[in-house]
Every structure is written in structure tokens, then in C-alpha cells.
Image (tube, rainbow, N blue to C red; front, side, top):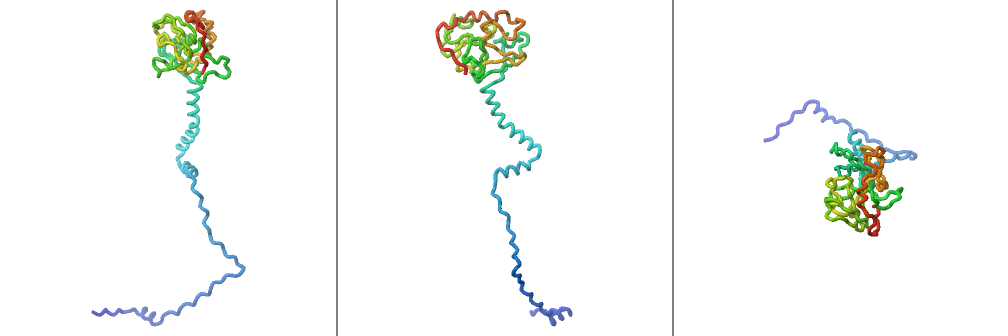
Length: 267
């Protein structure tokens, strides 16, 4: 079937019969000889990737509370390990519980069994300003209990290596020679049943000693002086609450240097 003829409008027929004249060609574009050629736009050099710059950008995008928290943590980060090292190897504050050192420590134990003293323990050994570099009788030391190594106890050094100790209950021997590198530790309580000490587990190796008590911080501040032990004087006891000759019977049970042995050093 032949296609149907298309009927043109009069305007379309006139445009086809008389097409418009062609446009004249554009003149060639010339550049004056003295005119500099404008430089082509260049892209800025791409910066290399920086991990720290990326972190700073991410940090700046955080909310203000998070940035403050991160700032505090950045300050505490070096302080925490220093504090842990200081408390474990230099000075440590400990709480004394139990009646074994009464009345020298926990003086009010008879009235208030929940009240405990706070003491300052030197774990470094001998401090630079101290004259003595050895363990001495009368010193209060902290040590890992031979009966329970997980427990740290506080007792008084009563005998040094070579001393003969007249024991008390519950020790089965009447007397005991303190061997080399050991000390005899006892509590200050008059009742032997209140103190678990060398009369129960024997002389204590100096390798178990972890520190020496320097001062009582609470409830009454006082610096402990081990030399007053031989005199029977308690530092700060101006009212003589502890008696005229504190624990004289304990010193009388010690025969000093019954056997000549070297004294153990601090630390």
C-alpha cells in the first residue's frame, strides 16, 4: 500500500522554496605577537596522606564533651603508671586491721573493732637520708605471711639473725635461734592468741619482707622511731598511756647475738 502524501502548510512550503542565505564564515582568530599567552590553570599539588593529620581532623569533628574527655585521658595516661610504680615500689599507704599490734596500732580496738589505723610504708628500702641500712630490732615491717602468702601482715622485728628467742605460746620450742637471713617477728598484743606471728610459723625469711612502716597517718599523725623500742618509749606518748617501759617483757625474752651472724640489710 503506497504511503499517503503529506500536506505541507503554506509557511513550510515557502521556506523550502526559498531557503535562507548561508552565514558568512568567521574570520580566523589571530593573537598579537607581543601578547603573552595566558598560562593554563594548573591543579594544586596533592598533599601526601598523613595519619596524624587525619586523626586531628577526626578529633576536631568530635563533640565538645568527647574532646574534653579525651583531653583528660591524655593527661592521666602518663600519671597512672607513674602512680602505680610509686605505690608499689616507693611509698604506700596501708590500712591496719586486727588486734595483733594493739595498743601500738589500732589503739581503740577494744572499744571499736571496726576502727583501723592508716600507716605509711616505705617499700624502697633505705632512704638516702637514713643512717641505718639494716633491719633493726623494734622496726615495724610488712611481709607476706608464711601461713597465707596472699596476705600482707604488719609485725615488729623482735630478733635478728643469731639472737636466741625465748618463745611463747603456741610455739612448741622453749627457745629458738634465729637463722641467717631470717628475723623473728611478733605482734605487740599481750595475749599471744591475738597475734599470728613467728611463734606460730617460726622465723621469717627477709625475702618475704615487703616494706617498713615509717609513720602513722591516721587517726593521729606520728613518725615511728625504731630506736625508742630499746628504751621502752612510744613516740608521742607524753601521757604515758602505754606505760613507763613499753613491752619490757618482750625484750627480756631476747638474748642478743647468742650466735654471731651477719645482719640483714634493708631492701
